Picture 1 (tube, rainbow, N blue to C red):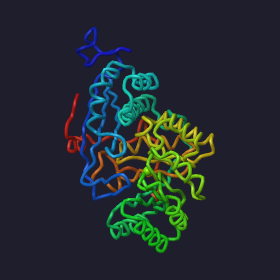
Picture 2 (picture 1 turned 60 degrees about the vertical axis):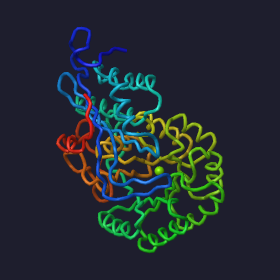
Picture 3 (picture 1 turned 60 degrees about the horizontal axis):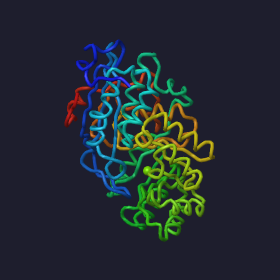
Picture 4 (picture 1 turned 180 degrees about the vertical axis):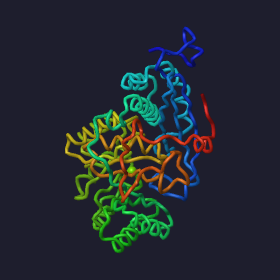
Length: 387
Ligand SMILES: [Mg+2]
């Protein structure tokens, strides 16, 4: 592998034509509109993410976002260090079109840090797409869908506020809703399901425990939930409780989705062989990019499992990468949850609103990720920038 830390460090003092000349890592703090509770923790005030900018020597700019959540996977500070200190030498001076080679090197260089790798791969694909005049979906197989049904997560501990939000979103055409459960008791979960079913007969309800249920007596609790006909129940128990996941999957009629249990293609293979779920929530922030996420979707499809387009607390930039993934991956049929940019952040960092119409995400067609980053907004939310 080449590579010089900065253009000045290159052997001849120059960066080759069309190679990556500059890498900027922005630690950002994005204010959110309210509190959201989950089985493994809460989000309130702001989310800390990392935005990556790559500039090529011929003036092409590529963008990517890393959205770790400390309770789920990792921290923004560690992600920024992974990019700035460990991946920077791999990237500066590299030919950005060699996406697979760079990502394979990144995988050998640092273990874990999937969000950092997802940001790097998105930025490289953004450059490749802009160069080729193709949207990222076209680069990773070609689109099989132009719109993706959007799911909103109901996670406000103040359920009255959530009901107001659902009324507003229902008006906007959103019909998929995922109720976050397992953080304030079983009765609260049942009451909210009853209230939603009573008010709306045309919505597709899903349930996500984020590991919040104790395995002991879990099946009986889930049978109560099942009475409200959710389309699926996501990650009822802790990721480490694989036997309980398998027992629940075997016991219930409702499909069980694995989220925290499946980060990588290897996790997906083990999940299939142990049948710990009926489907996967697929996220580029877990898999380390679009290509490994597609591998997980193919494993799910080959095993007869379902697949859903999950995400973390991303801005529109992270959503764009996920959108191209779902657009180009036939197996991801259960919709997506790229709602945060429009319905949770106080402000996004894109130059245009993240595209949602009639309850669905519209897949961009412009080259690369399809929508540019608003650099003034990025600067406003940047806490620390390196490079
Ligand atoms: Mg989940």
